[in-house]
Image 1 (tube, helix red, strand yellow):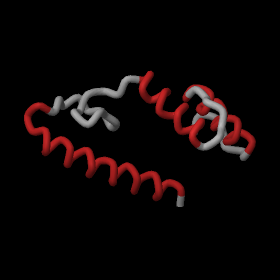
Image 2 (image 1 turned 30 degrees about the horizontal axis):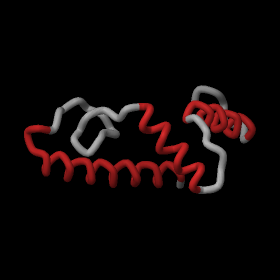
Image 3 (image 1 turned 30 degrees about the vertical axis):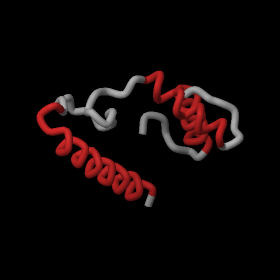
Image 4 (image 1 turned 45 degrees about the vertical axis):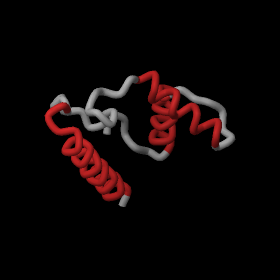
Length: 86
């Protein structure tokens, strides 16, 4: 179930990104990134962090680093019995 949701979300994202690429035409760099700016360039990690922190604060949660979310996810997966490395 969760896998299907993720696959669908990635396909939707890919379609939206393809529309952005077509609108930009030859100026879109073919760098192979899954997540890009609207002009096809790589995302700046600082902007991603700032976006997540802003969303946390807007939701009434403490601002958290993306790295901390990664550790939190691993802790939850281990508690659920998911073997490391999967």
